[in-house]
Image (cartoon, rainbow over all chains, first blue to last red; front, side, top):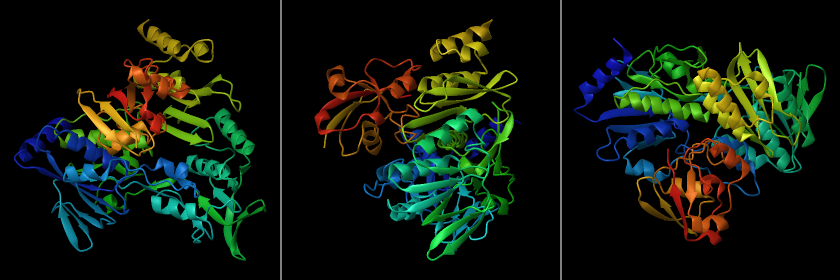
Length: 433
Length: 103
């Protein structure tokens, strides 16, 4: 029996009454699931009764600005909500905010929180991820912070002053975006990266070198191949100690060293978990009445033929749409191309696809400061991903190519006399030939 | 507070008085059909594509390079296309009329 028929049969059984959907978590995917489920009921009764339970006190809000524009203490920005308060009220969505689900009772089909139980017909886990704190002595000092939630961003914003000195541990997207925000505000910042180059997990050498040059140009004290060994408090300030003996003094430290999926709830409930909650192509967990979406889940990706756990807005939104389709009885397999963006200073990095495992990287244009260029990642001649730096055209074209498996002739990719649009045309001709 | 009229993909006219910073956020806050604003307003998702009414295009101004890039492969893109998130709502735009392209 296929998953389509299973889901369709379940829906037929429950069609008589409004289904009760409980969403655990209140991030991007939770908001999108509410939007997609209620959209289906716009011309009549909403087919699903929705409860959102989230441990943050806010309705779902946009997280990306937290490491960027939100941090300016001179012009504090409000949180930008994904949908206005009216949306939840008008659609009778019950918002249980500031509450943490403690357990799932799969037999009774209910979730438990603070001595209370809430029943569900379908459960959607949108529990997100948590920024890691590497096992370093002193890493739990109250002045060592992470930047993931509005509450954490508020704490950091309150501490930002132009006479402060900040150390960032980790040169991934969050660390670099935060460093860029600090430099814009005139704050001294040192970034310490364990690997030999910045963004090493996600980009090629040329792109890393570009970002390193950019941050140094803007006054970031950037150190790579640096192992932090301890964070000590000395006379009211923090001293970050490193393996090579250099010390870095800071008023506070921010750690951006990757994130771990919040899959404890699923694990306790006996669901399949392995670097995130395992889900099938419909985002269904090993319990067919429980779905998972966003940062917390791990799914086989049809474009890359690999298990992926993707932390991004796009992934959260697209997986939520997949969950909604199944809950509404019209299951569709999740097969969208991942995409990402990062804004630092006046540079916009847009990434189409996932470059992991590439064996060739072609640079289109000049990877120099002030220029726009793109990095094209291939594996055995197949286009995996494109990093576009201030080049939305290359990004847009990559977004058309990658899902279809098309690729232009390699010598054309690096020829900037050929426009991205012409590259697309050439790839189409190649695939028809 | 500038007044903006959005003509939705279904042809409805939605009039909004908003102190939101841009055309996308004003639409999302007022639940205007067809404007999603998935990326939060950084010209990265193109889910706030609008056509500026021809009478207003001079005041609003043309699309920036990144907007043009994001819309280059969109079938519905015209010379009056903008991403709503990149159009700041200023008092000079009071009375603006835009057509929502939608998905």
